[in-house]
Amino acid sequence: MPFSDYKTALVTGASSGIGAAVVERLRRENIEVHAIARSAGPLQELAARTGCIAHAIDVTDRKAIAALAAETEFDILVNNAGVDRPKKFLEADEGDIDLLVDVNLRAVLHICRLVVPGMVARDRGHVVNISSIAGNYNFGGNSTYHAVKAGVAMLSNQLRIDAFGKRVRVTEICPGRVATDIFNHVHGDDPSVRERFIDGFELPQASDIAEAIAFAIAAPVAVNIGHMEITPTLQVMGGLQTAKPQAAPGASEGPKR
Ligand SMILES: NC(=O)c1ccc[n+]([C@@H]2O[C@H](COP(=O)([O-])OP(=O)(O)OC[C@H]3O[C@@H](n4cnc5c(N)ncnc54)[C@H](OP(=O)(O)O)[C@@H]3O)[C@@H](O)[C@H]2O)c1
Image (cartoon, rainbow, N blue to C red; front, side, top):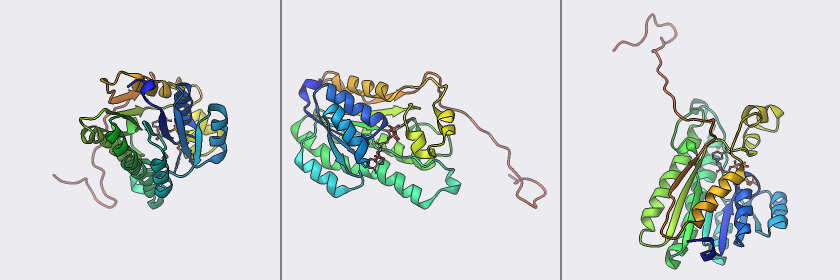
């Protein structure tokens, strides 16, 4: 359905990066946008700049989300809020696993539970789930993030099946590296973080991802753009590693077959 058929949107993770860019883009189409994040200050600035409605809440706050979903019939839902705590799984931290499951997957499931049935009942809606190339490819050191983003990818496929027969579209956006502050949010504010992830690279900007989302939403109602993988031109995924067995300490030779 083109933008003119939609009136309201809910965007999570709107205080920075991709979420803020999506809010700006949807506001340009005169959509009433409800923007969620925990940081009240940046959200208020976004509201002043774009006219969105700011909600300083945590996506894991089920009561607050339920209240919002009961108040407004959302035509567009952008599940974007996300965090990462990269670490080899062999050194995984208990709290990091819970955080990634709670924010990147559990909250997405509950928000869909609260919003998508209304879309189905009204025969009108568009769900945009921001997963990651991490949901489809392996690159090590991010196992929990890979697992929860793969969950979002599969949820996106299943939502289409469960809403089948109604004009509810589901688009999964799989970004590769995008020039946002996520790397500082993950690794801290040291200038070396920007050097490692952003400076000197040619990267998609948050606004490029927002334009791709706008393209999917603006497509005719007969068109569901299901999956968009958006990477830097100068980034590829894939690789193959093969190791020889290593002898255990004290053993004279490697494992026997
Ligand atoms: N940038 C990339 O390279 C990249 C690549 C692949 C996928 N992605 C995905 O794209 C999405 C957006 O990332 P980004 O790059 O824009 O990162 P970002 O700048 O760090 O933005 C993340 C957003 O999520 C919000 N958020 C985090 N925890 C939240 C919570 N518990 N409740 C509500 N909001 C919460 C943050 O706001 P508050 O801290 O104010 O709550 C912030 O607005 C994420 O899902 C990320 O996994 C990004």
